[in-house]
Length: 287
Ligand code: AMP
Image 1 (cartoon, rainbow, N blue to C red):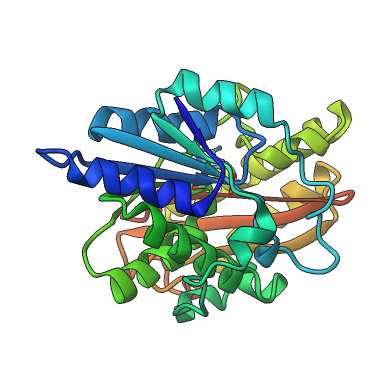
Image 2: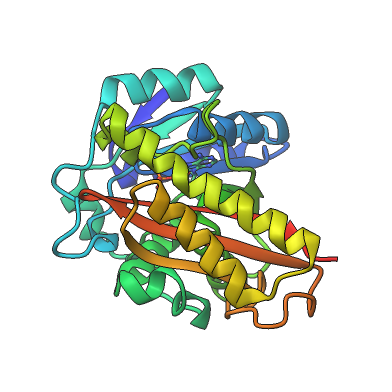
């Protein structure tokens, strides 16, 4: 596996790929490192579907707020390189942060209205930082297919909208299922911050989501009661700092008042456990 540390070197590598006959299908998996099985599932999927797989590891300062965990975000580079290699990537791009942020192709990028609700209300500037860097990476890697996780559902939808508007039909962006620990806890780089007690507390998130899913499927309760039951579950588990518990329309991401207006609902939660912000979601059939 090739380790590429600068944008010009990446551009040369991609140019070489594009000169091959036939040109291989390029798959791309952008990450912030501190990799786990969720990330490797994306790389493996790309491996199955593409001729060449490029991953990137870049802790993007533009997507962190001033009081967020940019500085202490884990950066276990050697282990990350081993994991992408084992998962089947052909190359990993690990740029120097400051040089990448000075790149001529970095620009303010289209941010869909989809960025406003849910996490957008609690992390101002976050999605703008995400789309700016993802668009830059797309310009450098020129992938045919790019892979993202459902765990960051809103991020996926925002990137999908940006891609459609600024890049047309290529790359095709693909959403992959959330990988969970045996306990049900969604894998996240931020789980590393949690003590074992806090991990048990964090299980309240998936418990509340599954309760929400059950109640929606049963179809007896309306939105307010379901949200209350989910909040109660979080509180019972000791989670008091709740950013949101929401049932949203999976396309518009707006609050879903009538649960049966669309065949699916997005049940989504963001909480803080001590200083760690955790998010998770489920897509639920409503009919
Ligand atoms: P991050 O490194 O957290 O920015 O995530 C990089 C990519 O991995 C994003 O597309 C995430 O949605 C995806 N990802 C993170 N956690 C998981 C998970 N548990 N299952 C599947 N994909 C994930």
